[in-house]
Image (cartoon, rainbow, N blue to C red; front, side):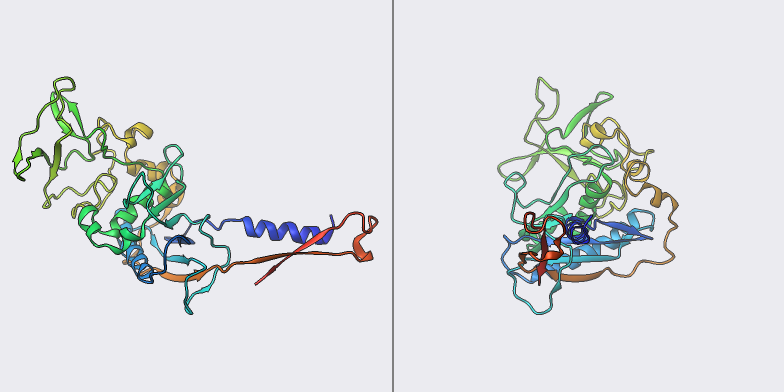
Length: 329
């Protein structure tokens, strides 16, 4: 094959190759967090992303038996943002990023979510956060700290586990009792309806399903001491772990049971992309250092096709032009 054609093919391969997240020893690297071009410039977003990942790193470290943490992350800002402290992006792009900051999806509003199309244990497509979620601290009161929510979404993305709650089926029957959909069942819950005046009353029961009606709400104790599970309610202060087999709630009508039929801990250590590493890694001797961050920017590129019409093109002469592709910075 012509050496010039080889060069073009190699360069195109380089452009199309995604670096992807890697577990290097105990630390995750090549974690790219990309801000959409739809997002107006607000440099506070960069600081909030750093805070979220830093807090999440320590939470992840404790959740996975002190084995892993976030070592390095790259924040990709849009081309139109102004700044002198942004370094030049290499292969990073919004379309390849596994963590994305973009405007709200009408289906989810400002709530964080992870796109998952695969089966149990398969990596997800990407995590979606909105600028409003990162900048408005009111969401911390609703969902819990951003670092904890980041680890919850990371578990969807990286390890292919699913939610242990179910907004559409919050209740089910178990041994003649009404239970809340959750993991673990050791988490104490109570059910009440909230009246127009703000007081609590017993829930009404649907005569067909014999389950609480739609107006029934689940209440949890902020002083709860049960530590699992992150895929049920990471915002609860005591929750610092994933459900293990000995505490997994197999009866709960949630996506984790529908897709996996086993505890989230089991999926992470037996079915995920990191299963071999997680089983062999030794716990760190001390808490990990904070993640290191790079803030990069991809400027608009200009592609030029230069046609070589010299006699060095071989026997075809000018009948077949072999374009050489060059990238101008």
